[in-house]
Amino acid sequence: MRKVISCLLATVLLVFCIVPITASAADPLTVEAEKITIVPTLDGTITEKEWGKPFYDGDPSADSVMILPADIKSSIVPKNIKLYVRWTDSDLYIGAVVEHQTYFNNYTGSKIWEADSFELDICVDSTNQAARWRTNTGYSTTDGKTYSYVYGIPNNSKDGVDGTELVRSKGRGTGVSVAGLKDKTVTYEMSFPWSYFGAGATIKTGHSLKVNFQFYLADGTKSSTYFENSTYLGSVYYGNKDGNNKGQYPVVKLIAEKNPPKVTSTAPVSSDEPESSKPAGVTVPDAPSSQTEVSSQASVSSETVTETAPTESLVEENNDEENGGFPLWAVIVIAVVGVVAIAAVTVLVLRKKK
Image (cartoon, rainbow, N blue to C red; front, side, top):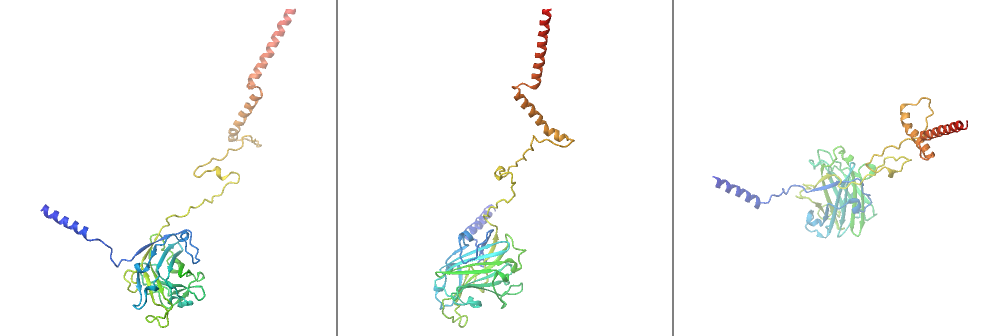
């Protein structure tokens, strides 16, 4: 019986060693968004000092799902993409640097999405991906400006795309988008206020949301597959696992700030005492009151007497110094003895004369 059990255990152990345990292919990719105290300046330029390191830096053709017609050349796919996500208690921040092989976007206004551009689908409730908040941002080579639109406002019952279009501007409360173009490389910097999602109360460390990072592609030729007279040719979904109608957006998990800036103490410092005289973490007692101060009040409390006692002692010591170091009583005694001795000598001398 023991041999049978041993054989069974060995078989089970062998199975676990041979068969790898892997996550389901349907599980979405998870990335981390670090909380920040100092927010980046949204000016179309991303620096490591402002944003830190990207959570993704690579060739999208190797890590993303491509939605491209069969007759479209792969030359329209960006060579490299960098992606950033940060957050504060009030806003979500997303950045991207896209190195295009060919960059084309001569649209202005709401048609900016029909050429090279960046779409974000944000689902603050990670359990309800259908309630997405969709925005698209592009840099127009026609006038050198950024155009960003909200296409639909999310709710809990249907997809957010309901035909409503809002220009993204800080004054409208929908956040900010800024894009810059240099040598076919486009940089996007964006902020999305949590209040616009109605999710301000739930946003905290550990919260998860789903975000679709999608790049629309064009090269200036007219599309024969998607939209008549449009230059939209296809798109790239970063981190998408199944590619079926954006089936699985990557999960973005909000984490705490790793290296928060040191806060300098702003406690007031007494004007009559230098700050350096009170080292951090050390309690410095108050300076004693002047011992030479004399009260002018008629009645003196016992505390006042106690405080002035050192003054009397100090006066006596000063008098001793003035008398050659002898106490006052000793000087008096010596003087009295001297007078008595002189008187005695005088009396004896007078008696002898008689």
